[in-house]
Image (tube, rainbow, N blue to C red):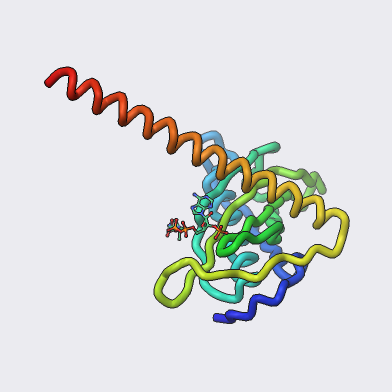
Length: 179
Ligand SMILES: CC(C)(COP(=O)(O)OP(=O)(O)OC[C@H]1O[C@@H](n2cnc3c(N)ncnc32)[C@H](O)[C@@H]1OP(=O)(O)O)[C@@H](O)C(=O)NCCC(=O)NCCS
C-alpha cells in the first residue's frame, strides 16, 4: 500500500482487458449474458482504481451501465477503464466496452459504465487517495462530468434519506394514533 497523496495522472490508471466470449458466457437467447460483461467491467474498473490508489479497493457503486449493442458468443471483447476523478477516499472509474467479430470485422461500442471504488487501509477502513491530474481536453471533460455525477449521487442519496425519514415519522404518528 502506498500512502503518497501526490496527484497522479488519469492516464496512468488506464487498464485494458481483452477476452474471447465463449458458450459459457451465453444467456438463454444465445447472446452474451449481461452479467458476464458486468463482471469484466467491475474487474477492469477495480484494477484502474487499484493502480491509482496503489492499494486495495472495493466496489461501492456501479451506475449508468448501458448496453448499447448485443455481444455474441465468439466476439472478442475489449474493456477499457480509467479513473475519471477522485474524492477523498473514493474514485470514479469510466469504462468502455467494445465487441469485435474477428471473422467479419464488425466492431461495436457495446457498453459504457461508471463505477465508484473506495480505497481501504489495512483495517478495512476508507483510506485517502491522491487527486487525479488531467492532461488532455477529453480527460478534463471526463473529470468535470464525474464531479457532476458525484453531486447527483449525493443529492439523490440525501433526498432518499430525507423521504425515508419523513415516512418513518408518519408511521410512528400512525402507530401512536392506533394506540
Ligand atoms: C464502500 C464502503 C467501504 C464505504 O463505507 P462507508 O462507511 O460508507 O464509508 P464513508 O461514509 O466514509 O464513505 C467513504 C467514501 O465512499 C463513498 N461512498 C460510500 N457509499 C457510496 C455509494 N453507495 N456510492 C458512491 N460512493 C459511496 C463516500 O462518498 C466516500 O467518498 P469520499 O471519501 O471520496 O468523499 C462500504 O460501504 C463497504 O464496505 N461496502 C461493501 C463493498 C463491497 O464489498 N463491494 C463488493 C461487493 S460484492
